[in-house]
Image 1 (cartoon, one colour):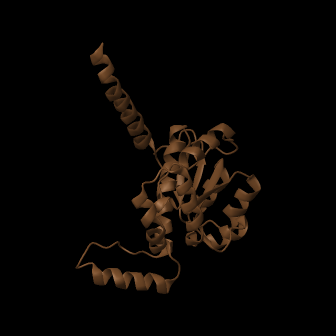
Image 2 (spheres, rainbow, N blue to C red; image 1 turned 90 degrees about the vertical axis):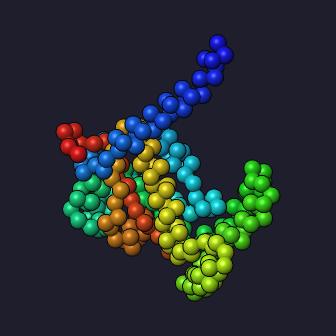
Image 3 (cartoon, one colour; image 1 turned 180 degrees about the vertical axis):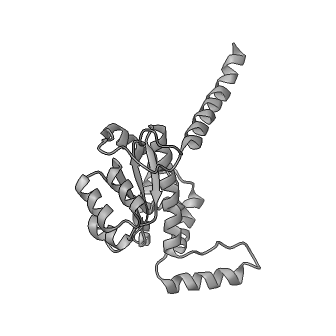
Length: 232
């Protein structure tokens, strides 16, 4: 009996590994979707709740997701923003187009995020002591600030390990990629097909969806049910 109890965690781990492997390896980029299909709200809710578990640098959460389900808005985005007939068709036919939005001024939220972390009590004292300065360093604004940080880290790198400094846009885009991947796998677990797309005019997407200037649009994911008979 004791052996059975000891093996239970391993069995659970093996089952989780098998389930994840199945989801990850079955994912494909869909070329076509079944038009007119509606994704039930509970599935959308579960996918988004899972997506919110994605990691982000210092938990700053610079990425937001806008789920476009309106046929009229999908048609507008397809006609006015998408590059190439394939992306336009996918935007029209998909049940939803999830637009991932990156906050390029996330430094303005660091104070609030710090307070939330402090109130939760989940972080150790050392993390809380370095979090404001380190997160500001990674996500600070402006090309001049980025250049100065790059110069400083390049000079100190031969002496001690230093972080690689990216632009705020590059940092935000990396975080968006992690969230988009979690979203895609969550969709796959529900039997939904997806296609991540970068071929669009982000300026027009922002105008259509009324996205403020401080945000950028690194990618969108067409989401729906795979077209029956489509080969991979």
